[in-house]
Length: 219
Image (tube, rainbow, N blue to C red; front, side, top):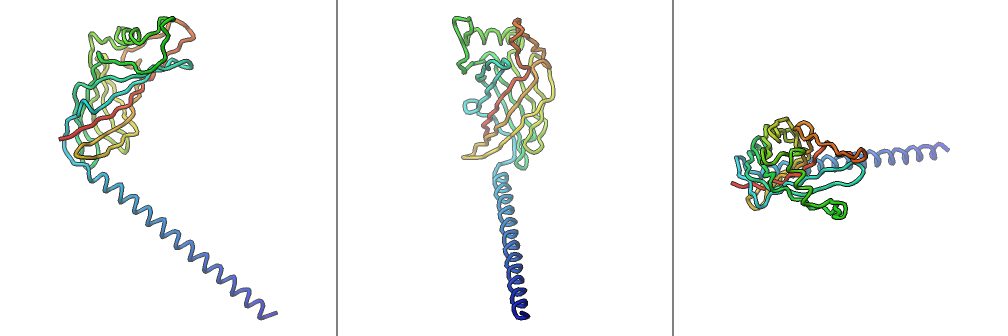
């Protein structure tokens, strides 16, 4: 009986030792993987050159979307007129870009000619004083003031009104000497005197205008 108890204790000790060894190995592997991920991220960021670059207008994109709450949305794109971006230590630290509101181009399919809902009518309405007053204010601009993490801060100007806004989920990559930056900008149209309300009570237009920005820049 005594020998049996000793043998049992030895087996338990062996199991405990094996368990501790396994946990230690797993912990070391986790730390090694985590360090490798951090290193890869640092290397990718380090590959982006510092300096101010001009935006390639042909390769860059600005897409927009507006929603009639609970019913449908309209989306499309608008062309950039100019822009530049300043990179320091892999981060966006300055720059600006401007879009030409006379190039508003709907790309969605939520139209019905029989109900007088056409892309042409939408463009006319968005260009009118109800929305962006394009004749008086043909450009909208964004002036970058800095960044923190994956958020770029700046000042958006629409219809002559300027407010601080944020471009979120910003990603920066470099390939073939070109730097590509993408991010999401959502702003409240009412802060820019775009205060149109649909005359039909059940047609509620969201105050949020959503934009997806892709800037491609190079020296």
